[in-house]
Length: 284
View 1 (cartoon, helix red, strand yellow):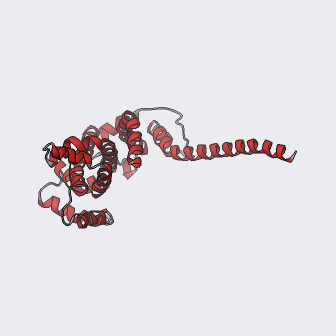
View 2 (cartoon, rainbow, N blue to C red):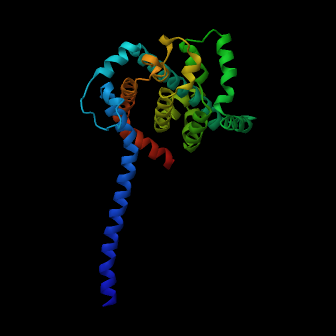
View 3 (tube, rainbow, N blue to C red):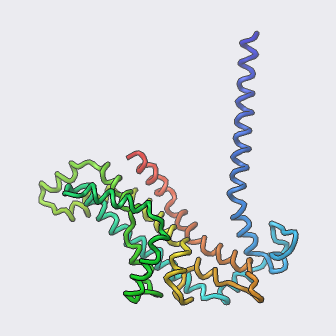
């Protein structure tokens, strides 16, 4: 009888445990989605509801005035274009230079390679803010302030990207390289025709990470651009002020929502390949 009673309790406990787990996950999901919902609903609220107290989550009156104002108060179309050029340019440059450096460190043996790798990894420990002023001085000396060159070139290579791709390249069998060398292929031909096609998962992962990181960056474009026409979406939103210096939160939320749309569309198109890339990168 005791064994029968115990066996009956186990399914009940299992169902209760699963129910509690589901409720906990639902609560965490709502906490994560709450800021996003606030942005979405605030973007469609009229000014009277945005400043109302106590505040309400769902707008009583839906309006597109905030989206119209974001394009009249700021050169927002230009800021979107600048963001694409900045984030896209950095991503392309980083993929090219990081992959070249990673290939050399992973597939070519030369004296000092380990020391060079240690220096690259150690540079990850240096706070970004500590190098901001020296980089700005160099950019200013070249006359690249308020230019795309000044935004993109200093970020054309990244220590994290080099280390990440090097670790992936090390996982690829060297027999592929040796077979190509026997056929008379040069190192660049091996890199372009053998290594890169097998590194698509890692390149896609790094590309998405780099694009999103630079698209959302505020400090870099804020420092290296002083003209409104050369700003990005993130730096442009900091210029929003209303009468008497009051921040129009509805307009700011509308701009933030527009800024999220390209990232969401990009992820929808590549989500399956991206998830497969992360999984395969982890397996390798």
